[in-house]
Length: 251
Image 1 (tube, rainbow, N blue to C red):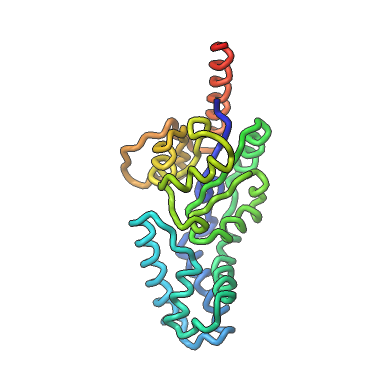
Image 2: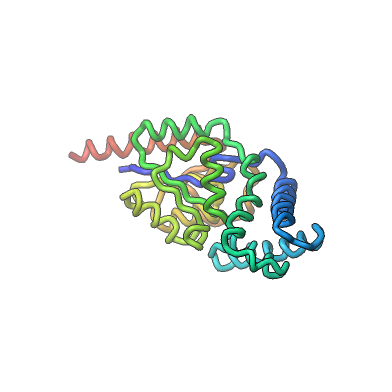
């Protein structure tokens, strides 16, 4: 019987209100301004080039090996190259938050997000969130800001585990915490590769939320493709009702 719903965050529950390039630039300027106050003595262009190289190297490594390199590690690398490593761990954590602070404000919930989560919660589903992100703090900050955190019993990020979807461990961590089998859960996400492939490999039902252009060709096929969370809710309700009827008829 269907007992749990697992969801992705970005482009599933929330979306950016600005182009990514503008958001990244604002993040970079926020981090630079913070470090200038901590005695960073390089011009912005040089700092930006150093940061972008470290960021892109980390992203390429993470994508290839399906591991996560947290933002704190990227910032530490940049600080070493900028001769600021002596400022220590506390500064790295604060710098990470300053980097993401502008972006937190730019992530907005989709109009149907709270309504859908409210309905799923009221229907008695156990709920978990699984997000690929370079910062666990960032994910929790978005959820608090969008008033979505209250719906989830379990929140797991790639930054916390240092592995990325579609690797099985990140999904099994949530299933174990919720106390359900993969066959008792459905995963809702926007990425065919990270969300649908990862969840299907474990035996979960999957719903692909296609809100924008697809990410290229894929051989994986979700149980359903929808354009909104409202449609996903209708399908999940239908699947749950069917499983209940099946159990009752078997008695």
